[in-house]
Length: 155
Image (cartoon, rainbow, N blue to C red; front, top):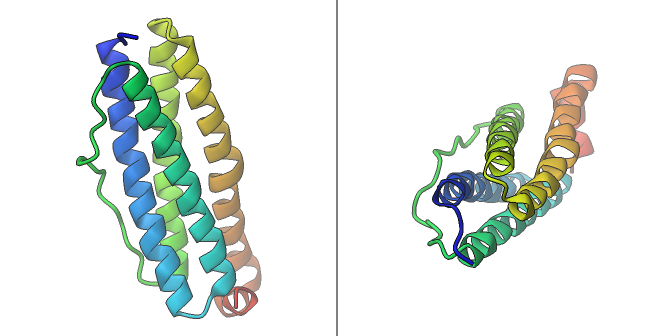
């Protein structure tokens, strides 16, 4: 099915963000594992898999619309040096993804591509209600119980 070029271009922009999120979650999960923070490792490795699923869905949709997925372009990643910075950087990525998803959902509505819109709405729900919410909670816990207690709870 020949898709709308504006929608395909917007999907490739989203793909660049998802691929960058995957890269950032991957390096952060490996750092947590190296530091012995196994609970953080498991959760962030799970987030990596979720981002991979989002990227796969976007790639599949671009192909369905007879576009070419751009797997080279990536948004810049920010690798943290400690747990709070890593969590903040990951949360910043999620906030950017939320904004971009909302923009592309609006474009899909305007261009009457309702199937792509629905796929992106599911990703938005996952990003807002799972990823960003969880990261906000972790940063809140660090504020409430202190970094040392938080890190100990993640071993």
